[in-house]
Image (cartoon, rainbow, N blue to C red; front, side, top):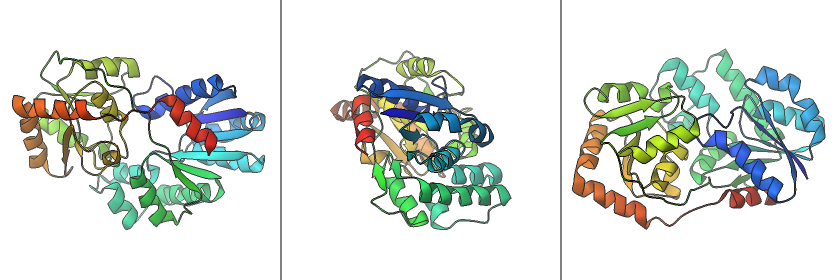
Length: 313
């Protein structure tokens, strides 16, 4: 087949979504398919530039739900091509939290949609169009799949779960006693709380690092922390686990389906709970216990497995 992968991120961006396109391309090509990646930074650029690329393809995989997902689906339907949309986050929830600063989890937001502004109403409208027109929807956790099923009344026949790539474990000794946070400095990442606690505890906050440099940092740090309002299945934590690093993260996550040990899950809105978790992990006895739990985790998933699941869908 000729497969077009559309994405809004380059492989230099931090996080799993940026690695998804190049890795899938590599595996699809090994299996004998022709693959192109189309990267677009906004819905406007995608709308005008994506049609010729979709015309070339037999199948389209969109790795984004709005800025790339919507034009990918519209172009695919216009040209009569099959299209899969991977849903790894929730752009409407993210936009609302970024605008208002309201502390609301992904589940709370979708259970009771608050008052939206004009831009958010447009996102909501086009998300429903995307869901209706896409041939298949792919989630990476049952947790988010259930949240969206309730909100958007999605048929189970239309939706699938394809788990994230899970690296094999390599254990690295920490060269410092710092906690590491990495990601985008946006409201739902609970960045204000992290900045407050970084004055009291040894927490380094980094953004904008290329993926390879971020991996080197994780290897050298004592532990990682990710107290976001919600996280679907964060690759930052999966990579930390693969390097043998205990973690602290929000309990509002689908990660527990894959890994429910090796770290501390907290209420992201409870500052004292986060402080206590940092103190607990700073204790050598407890720290070694969490490291043993990580060592006992046997789950791995190759990019080949991920690619084969997409092909079967």
